[in-house]
Amino acid sequence: MSESLVAGRGARARQGLSPENTVPPPETLRVAVWQCHPQPRDPAANLARLRAAATSAAEQGARVVVAPEAVLTGYDVGVLEPEDVDGAVDAVAEVARSTGVAVVAGVLRVDPGGTWRNSGVVASADGVVVHDKAHLFGGLDTTRVEAGDHPFALGSVDGVPVATMVCYDVEFPEAVRAAALAGARAVLVPTANMEPYVAVNDVVVRSRAIENATPVVYANHCGSEGEARYVGASVVVGPDGAVLARGGPDGEELLVVDLPLRAAHPPDGATYLADRRPEIYDAGGER
Image (cartoon, rainbow, N blue to C red; front, side):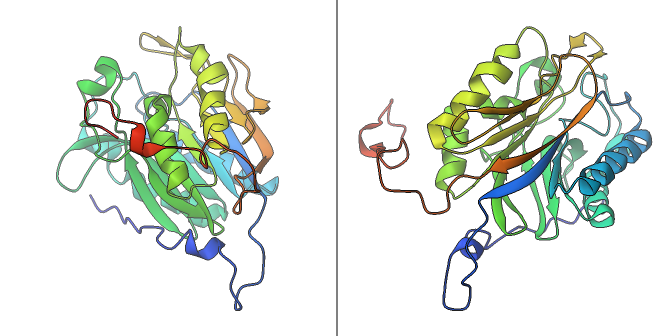
């Protein structure tokens, strides 16, 4: 399997001002969120549908489309073979190249070392980065994939630093905090959230945004698959916790939103990030 991974290095540096760069960093990014029901175990059909969604997003002026977890295969689909996921990262990158819009998508894959992963991909003109899901949820994850060793991956869309993580990762405050401290101006999350966990969509995602003054985009499945009944309710949350768009519980949708980014140069005044005291956060030797 040949999957080209190009780190989006220097993303934060591109946001700064210098005598050679007097253009201020953007304050918003038009994002599309594709809530969908992938065809189980049909990568070719799902790739075509992802390309169609990205094309529609581009036609509406979006600069990035966020798709759910395991979007090319489905999530609760039983045992997969390596050929079911071969070239998944390259396929997502090709959609981004051919449509001219960045793509953030969740995929199952076998990494170059032969290890199965549940990954999030950020593919844009700035490069391709891959995050391997670090927090595994239940048997659907633990019986099929190995956990990654990093809480997020930092990519770039039009020079804007964006972090990705997968589903359960966003439920850990430390993961989103780490992404914000690394300079992410938005967190883009493919997910496959199912009943009875809709509180994640309605409460947890908003909390992560408020805690870090950083917007969070959460793209979910809808419908049923195996024993899973997905809650839909994909959500776009601004850096102040405001819900800017929310999908319904059942149907497929493409939500397009002008997303306010985390401020590149935060204004004076108290914020959670500015008022942190990491030197006192000692829990059994962890900080």
